[in-house]
Image 1 (spheres, one colour):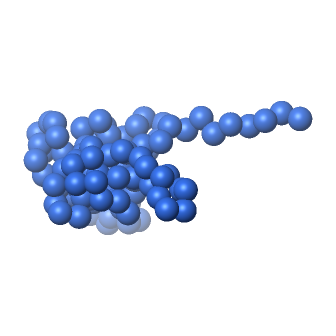
Image 2 (spheres, rainbow, N blue to C red):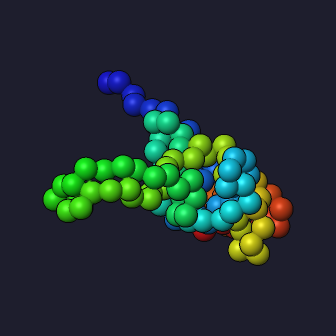
Image 3 (spheres, rainbow, N blue to C red):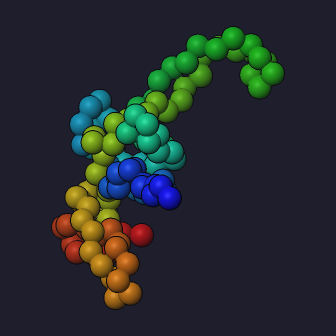
Amino acid sequence: MERKFNNQAKRHVKKGDMVQVIAGDDKGKKGRVVEIISETERAIVEGINIVSRHTKPNAQNQNGGIIKKEAPVHISNLKVVDKSGNATRVGRKANDKGKLVRVSKKSGEIID
C-alpha cells in the first residue's frame, strides 16, 4: 500500500488574515486576504495592488471599459497583523491541547 504525503508547505498567511504590505508600491498599507494562490505563492488582498483592466462588453459588464481590480501579491511581501495592530512574524507553538497554532513573534499571542 502506497502512502500519500501532503507536500504543501505551511504558509504564514491564511485567507481572512489582516496583513500589511512590507515591499512594493503599496508598502505600509493594510488589508484582508481574499484568496491564496498556492501554485504561485501569491495572495489577493483587499485594496492592495489595484490594476486597471480593459474589458470588452459582455454579459456581466454591458458597457465594457476600464475596471479596477486587485492583482496578486507575493506572500513574501506580506506580514500578518496581530490583535494589537502591529505587523509581526509568525511562529508555531503547541497549545494546551497539543495542536500547533500560529503565534505572534512580537507579542506572543495566538493568531486566529
